[in-house]
Image (cartoon, rainbow, N blue to C red):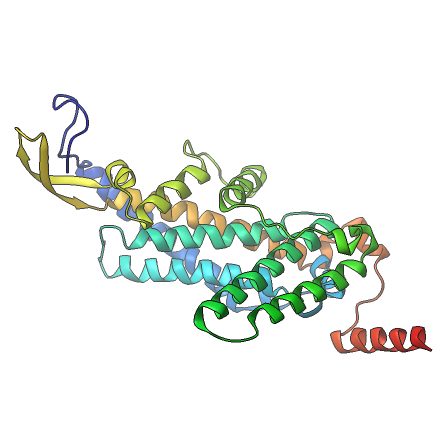
Length: 315
């Protein structure tokens, strides 16, 4: 490692105290049951049962093939999968230098996406955000299929866009479907939004000095092997210093405490997404606008009604 600062200002070796590391390991074990609870919710009735006349059940009328919560449940499942993998490694007393950080980053990103989709109380805003996410999925699928040499990627994307505009048209309050812009926020904006939602959530015990977006930036730097992030987060030991060159060869390791803090933020983010899902999927939490929605109907019945109306207009 080269030293860009004065030799007197830079300590090549930097390790946390033994007590700090023991505290980090204790935090891991306190978080493991919370990860298991999230797993039970995602794989059980908590997520699988969406009550009739709940906000989420009523959203389905306007979501077409993106109905039944596919967008946000997929994101939460991906977040959980990362957390379960981290948990499994830590239970095996394995602490890689940087390999855990991409998974923690993914856990936060995916849970933040679910929060973005579920947070609005207004149906129009939830639908608008779902359409943004669905359009982005179609765009990146087309890019992947083109790079893989699969024909028809752009046609599938264009059909998805057309289907989404038809869904916008079914909800006049969303405006002109032809001028509807599909524009997802950046990941920085998603994470900052999730942090604001968690901070405002009375069920969250929020007392963090470091914003969630700062954690995400650090995890991103570590995921991409950026020197600044490694210097910021990792422990350094066994330095073999070349005084003339003001550099050193050293051993860099991850800190149990740093992993614990990042894991805590990831778990909190998924828990916040699950709480929102519980609110939106329960009719007890229905909002006033839900009362004015027509009776819920199956997707096949809605499609048949659409076809019948189209045939009547043609006649």
